[in-house]
Amino acid sequence: MILQAAILLAGLSVTASGSTCCPPVRFSAVQSVTIVNYTFAKAALYSFIYDGINQRYVISGDLSDGFVSTTKVIYDYPNKTGYRVDTVARTCTAFHLQGKFEDQESVCVPSGAVFLGPFFYGYGVGRLASKGYSYNRTTVNGEHQNVVTTVTRKDCIPIVITTTTIGGHGGNALETLGYNDVRPGITDFTVFDIPPYCTV
Image (cartoon, rainbow, N blue to C red):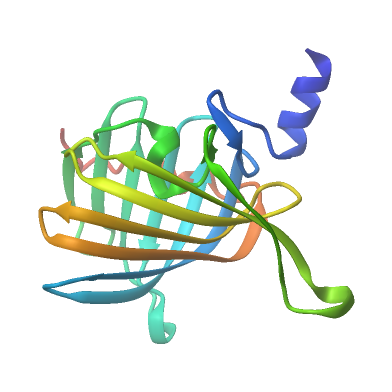
């Protein structure tokens, strides 16, 4: 028990129940998102802060072209509530969350994922050792998805996650998440504070 607590406090990778591997329980990153379906295409950079201990995360941005937005979305899974917040306009919209926390953003590799083998990014002494996995899942809306993920060999930190959705509401879709500038821990927990002007 003491060893488990030490690992948790050190921010090392801890495998969640039903997972092959998970990244550090708390981390922040820049999330590069590309979504394409038959009606639209979107590419953006977001700030991503993940708190696996309290089952919540925040996405804010868009950081593209050096632009820092005043909006953020807080996903609070213990309360099954999300909040779209604009801190300058002082507006907030609450919405109901579905699904399980560990399935969100495909951060953890689930048990049963097919190992695709070891990979390397770059070359020489600076190359990044990684491993790939593939798995299928069904969303709460009944959409069938195939997920291919590449994570670092050490600590299971996500690098690139590609999700192909077949027969979704918007037709077939492709979503790619890239994680950059990943840092263990959270420096400012106030990003999870729900403003008083938010109502459920």
